[in-house]
Length: 297
Image (cartoon, rainbow, N blue to C red; front, side, top):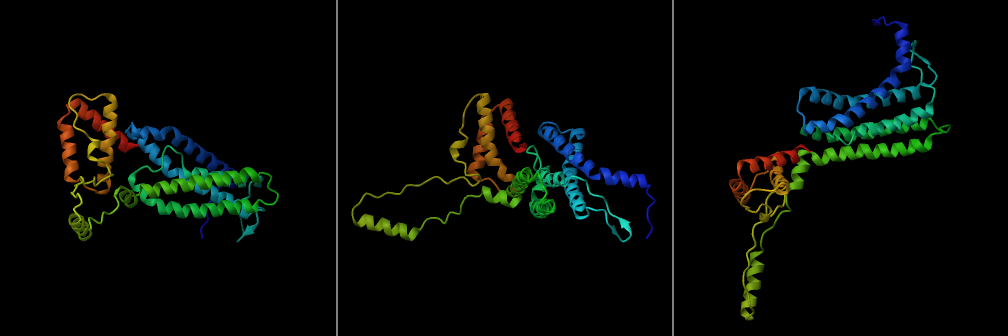
């Protein structure tokens, strides 16, 4: 096998700074996502979206690679020889390594400002679940290797619990936002319909007993989101700023089913049509703007 001629100085530099460099890189990416991710709802420039997309992809990779380096350091603490090649030398402070292994779980959970970059990323929740299991095993392995001399075991345990919660929270969020789960959450419970045999038997028995009896018809419930027909009343004239926000949110509850291929009932179609027919152009565009603002959150 041909060996690439890498200068020995470069190898020593890599062995000394690889772990430190990737931890710093992971911290930098997390900081960048915290401050820049909220801008994606207001700015669609490629000069913002491309770096944000790159940081979103690199964040998980950098944290995972750093955990692997920590595990490798713990597995080869003495720089033994294997196949006549020297493996990398571990960083001296094993207590701090165990702490960083747990701290990187928090990085894998991602910042609260961004969970998924696009709707398609929500479908990868199962991959994140497997990642959660294996990264937790790696963090536990690093922690066990540092015992019983670990003087930072209390903060390491607290950080480990925090990291698991953070990572599990992200995985659960991706699962709940996946297409199938989101569609299921919008569907109302199945209505078995009226038991006509029981109804007519009850009606006949009441009539024979000369009891006052009458039928009362209830309006059909909404098909999407459980909204009622009174959610969008036909108001004439201009809308106030508060009403623009309220109507935008009500229409969002109706339209969000279209994302997962749910359709309007005829009653809901008529309600939305009548609402916009009673608006002037300015108010209609304000309501639509508020509607899309809800979708971008």
